[in-house]
Length: 119
Image 1 (tube, rainbow, N blue to C red):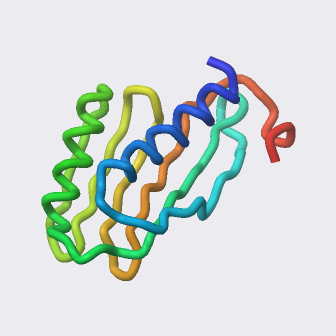
Image 2: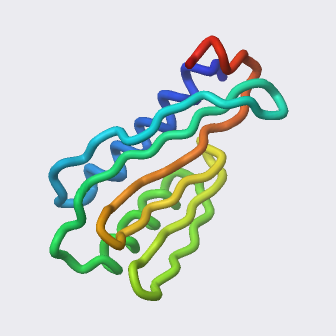
């Protein structure tokens, strides 16, 4: 895959994850290129104010979606639930329900390329 493809895949998964939830106000918080063992990988964070909802149910919905993409998932259900995913079309991703902010943060696959070309 090209650097553009892995970057776009990560952004699409983050935005599709957000679309599963009935929450308004999602915004790009961070999008960056960084070096890795094979060349370049991308980090991305998509965030929104938290909703008045059943956070554990939303975390489970996110985990189910990520499993459908071939990822391994783990849900930490204590306090503010967090979902961790890895594998499949990305290196890693998480969905946090708080406190104070919902966010989807991930790292793309590492592919040949130069990080400076994408900064």
